[in-house]
Length: 313
Image (cartoon, rainbow, N blue to C red; front, side, top):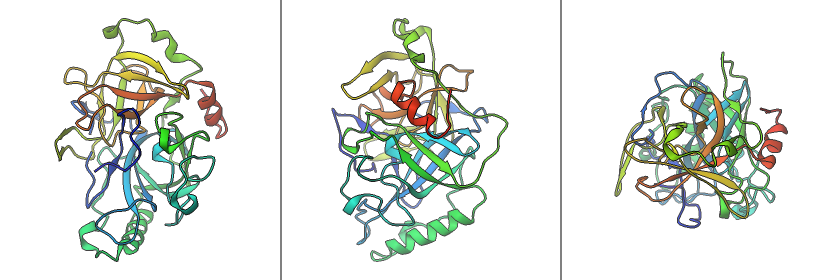
């Protein structure tokens, strides 16, 4: 089930809703096999979401993200907006849609950098009664906090992020509460890096997209597991809208592509690079069979936002 965000221009946000055990893996991709240990799966709680199984609001979601230094993860803006703060809403009365008004600074967000994150520590949602959604939050929070695998953080979306226009300014940062040291991290693309591909023939350059999203969606059936996967899509075109910029990548059986749960995951400049040029943002249809949009992070406003956290190319 998708997080219930407004659909704009028939675009669907690539976010996975977590039931008893979440689903995830890149569509028609390949196992990552340890190539990108700094790419992880995010799990977060949104207090304003109404889950039909419970009387009280509150829902859990997964996204993907990239560790760019010991304490910062970059992901999509829609994966960081409205995250709870110790179980409480960060929006005013649960109604705000823009980062300028609220939805910022939630700490109910965790990330695992395992190739296959362990969700077995979470009691199944089915074990909680209709009036026990707050108990589910407490149980899951306690299990995640007690785990050495899952790292808690604070979520901040781009200051211009608007939930009603989620594909514009769709960038977010998670500041980890404790450092995660690795021998290598993702790097940030410099200003206008992607412009060099504006006139490139379609099949001459392959990007590398990584994430934990679904492998296949057929009607209401979802296939795949929470496993870090990679695909090598080609550029369809560079696009701009009145608010911001993104690029469109292929999504098919020949190149592989993104699906629900890959939101926020990185698109690297090429198959041997750790240079992040974009984060996964949207899909054209509910079966993940069309083209996919990734939000480019090489624009002035995005680089300024990242620089406010000390994240620079």
